[in-house]
Length: 170
Image (cartoon, rainbow, N blue to C red; front, side, top):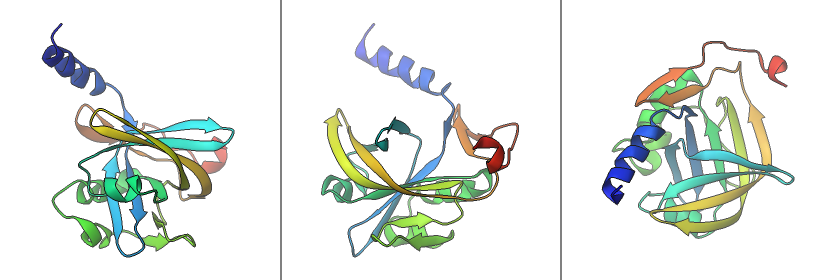
């Protein structure tokens, strides 16, 4: 199979992988940056950590590459508009004009009413192809509301069929 065919087949396969929609946020101390993403996953519970994959052409890549900490904000189904805002033509501070944004004591922006806002200290990175994988050691987590995540699959936003109270999931 040619590389072009393999890339096309991979993209088709990934359309079948349902993922929670997140907004990754960071700051360089002067400006805030945000990007919608699904390339996020847990890494380890010892230490509690996760990883994010960021295209090297993304506006927040340079800030992360310089070592900035970050937050993974897991969106609820009612926050689809924020995903569009943080993946469209509006850049920089304009991405923070909607939503209930706050700033952690360490200076990282987070979405106060996200399903979960996972504040991370950057703890490693490596480049692979067009992306950099950043490892975040989890330092703090804020939970909000009932579990009803915004999910992206086959090019469409959806949510899970059932919504459970946070206590049932703990």
